[in-house]
Length: 156
Picture 1 (cartoon, one colour):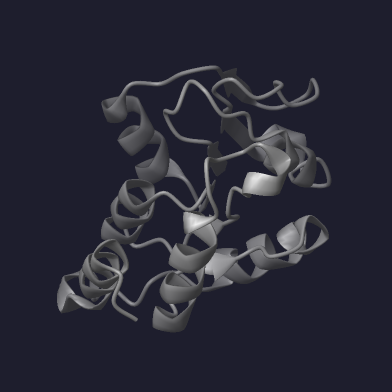
Picture 2 (picture 1 turned 120 degrees about the vertical axis):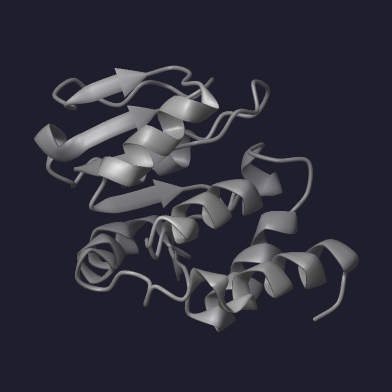
């Protein structure tokens, strides 16, 4: 199962990520889309919103987690042993107030704990790579937490 979560922000749509998942096998997809356009019919499950507990349950059951570059989502996925596939929201598309997710994605990518989708057409390839490579089980090594702390403090 592939779990796609676009986060809990009720303001910003992320249709670009919904469009990027179109080539994936719909019968494997569980999608939480928020204010974005729902994915085309055929997805296994589609939810506008989920509780935090439901998100964790789906992450735990998933083979692959796809998300925006939300620090909380990435940390939760990593804690469950995933190398999440993430795509940054971009200001130029009205997906965020600024491009902070680009900076976070770059920092997370350097840790090797996320697979970043810089171009939407690369998402299927990143999913294939992520399904073969889960986190090494060292989520307690502190590298990801250190990266989040550095990003929040503006340190690179």
